[in-house]
Amino acid sequence: MSQRTDYSLNHLRSVSTGYVALLIVLLAATLLTLEAIIQQVQDGLVATDMAQQGTQAGATWGLYIGTFEWFAGMAVGALAITGYIRFNQLEQYQMVARLSNIWAFICGLSAAWLIIIDLGTPHRVLVILTSWHETVLHSPLAWDVTFVTTLMVFTLTMLVLSLRLDFVKGNPSLPIQTRILERIVTIGATPKEVPKLEEMRRWLGLGLLVLAFTAGMIPGLLMGVVGGQPGYFGSERGIVFLAAGLLTGVALLNLTAGVLRSLFSWRDALSNEVFRGLGRALTLFGFVYLIVLFNDVLPVVTDMAPFFEGRIGEAMVTGSLAPLFWLSVLLVAVPTLLLAVFKYRLGVTVQSIYAVAILLGVWIKAQLTVVEPLLFPNLPAIEGTYSPTVVEWVITLGAMAIALLLFVLALKLIPLAHRDTEVSS
Image (cartoon, rainbow, N blue to C red; front, top):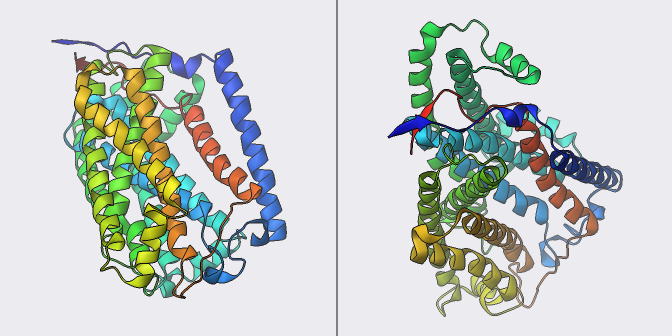
């Protein structure tokens, strides 16, 4: 049976007290983050606990790169979701596709921002860009820049193309800010090009899928090519990163869809069937992540592991880093198992809470993945330390707040679905 979705454009027009309060909090967090960035630029990386004495006594990478991996992974996961829905033309999930498209761009932007922050001074970005043609063949940083730029270009192209298609079909009663966006993305458009736009969107969806499962592994692979560094070098790094990205991408969509359904009561555009589909994806990728993590960890905790690899495994499983490692595992494993056992008997709110736990669990493991090897260099009896400073915490949490701010602002500009579309209930 088909029926008209209950999605409305009220979220573009109305401004509630809660929305204003959230906006004020996020803007305050943004200003606090900018103040911390200014302090770091003025004082240099001495404002952090990174790179104090090299890898023999501390971590040269820390929260910034760990959170970069987390954001980049979510961007890849959201990219894959967008591509899958658009290529298979799953109209019932059209709002999920739009949400994942928006989040893919925001997460890619956040990942790029954290690379700039980790460089210490912003002008170093110009050095990377101007010498890219010389360094791209041997510089992991140049490849990171290439990956993030490519991801953002593709996600923005999909967003513009899908909005152009929706606007050409007609979307009544748009507020002024969305009307401006409509005029920009529909320059030269006519109703006759709708079939062509639909085909372009579908095949671009396939392109996004290919990008996610190939270039999407680059941030992980770049760690895998760091030769001579225990805990990094290895062919499985890309797969570990991709598994984490797919899981966090689906978790982010579960959480976002759950919050929006609760706020706006969109029970057709975000129906129970849609949430069952998201729950199945969350369960599947949760098990995939746990299996990949098990295969990644097991070799370094056996007696056959090389000494320096074994030290990392011991610290992670039974040593100083064990509490954080096992917490990260439990935050993913428990929700995944509960989703598998109870399946469709879980409510949307509970599923959203599980998504939060999974996002936190993968974020903790992303920090450990970056920091663990740097604390145990190729020197016997040497163990480094790393304690993030207040500046690092403010900038890292601020990056998350800014990402949320961008999404909250996008809710007042971008329609989340085409108003006249019919969905199956």
